[in-house]
Amino acid sequence: MKALVTGGGGFLGMAIGRRLVERGDAVRSFSRGAHPALDALGIASLAGDLADAEAVAAAVEGCDVVFHVAARVGGWGPRDDYWRTNVVGTQNVIDACLDQQVRRLVFTSTPSVVHAGGDIEGADESLPYAERFEAAYPETKAEAERRVLAANGPALATVALRPHLVWGPGDPHLIPRLLARARAGRLWLVGRGENLVDATYIDNAADAHLLAADRLAPGAACAGRAYFIAQGEPAPAREWIHGVLAAAELPVALRRLPTALAWAAGALAEAVYKVSRRKDEPPITRFAARQLATAHWYDLTAARRDLGYAPTVSTAEGMARLRDHLRKQVDPPDAGARGPRP
Image (cartoon, rainbow, N blue to C red; front, side):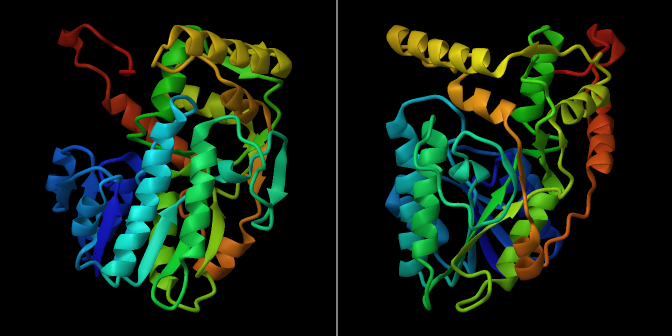
């Protein structure tokens, strides 16, 4: 199989590419920059911008399946930037697949497209898209997902996966940020930390994408549908955070911040950053406050039934692997550092 992975140099994209190579597929990546790690895996790397339709078309040419993983992520930044990458870029991928007669498109979405601000506990895919969004990321991903699913048909079978909070060794975003704040004494627990959360270990998220691609075809049960992907092990947020801190051999010292206060702090921080035209992300946003304070875990029945999805790495095993990975990041004694790198 000839596969294209957009965002192949990213955390999830590289995991998908590695899985494809391991089973003998020919893989190419399309991303914004060069990634030597892709070369080491034998993945052909193409550099370009998703908003450049010609570059996308060239990357798609000759492929049997496209994994569209690339996206602009985060809870802060100009809406136009998110729209350009997540919506225009996704439309370019769809158009290229149709023009190049690619038969399968697997889109990486996010559960945030249905998060309306309250708890989500055991919901399935019948949950509607949120009507209002507090950040451009979930808003533009929702629009992109709509377009991908609407494109499903005899010429192009499409499916959208919504992996929740992907984490594991090599994660460049979630884990490093959490550990950096813990080391700085600025790790806050929004609310009481009893809200149930079901994050997704990286290997399970990657496996779900390959399972979807293998079952995807015009008229297949999964064609034109979206699926939640997670561990199937919802646990209180504080327990998951404790697990990460333990893996990094850091003391558990979480301070609590009332939910209402966190949301108000996010709103104030956003206002200050807008007025001052700062381009970096505020320490907290309304979107982040909602995500941290609410429960979000999902019914995985549809993914198990239609995709054959079954998480192979438990949260406990994932934490053990994370611990081993972080220990390997320890600087040698002559470098003057004894703890894991941030």
